[in-house]
Length: 94
Image (cartoon, rainbow, N blue to C red; front, side, top):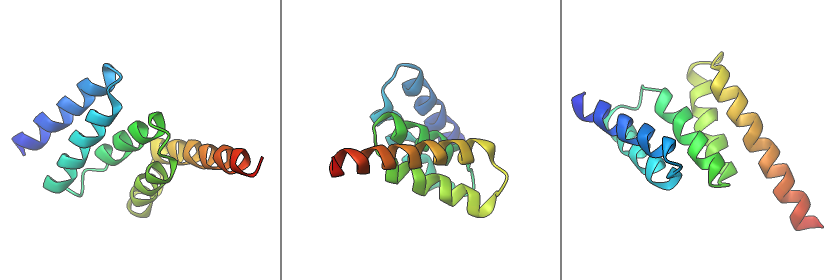
């Protein structure tokens, strides 16, 4: 549990510095230690949004909402992911 907290804090620090790829990697490591801590999924979704990885962000949010269907951050970030996917689709079509 101590390692989980350390990794999560390191991820949070990377987010504050704008290092989203590194932060996403830390959150992924957290998930290997504890799949029930949903804040790391919403945190990683934020990183994916910043990296324009909309499908991955949507998947993380979907996972949280399957278990915790009232998670506001997951709803909001999934909406941003859908918006990003729609913009990408329009750009490809245009």
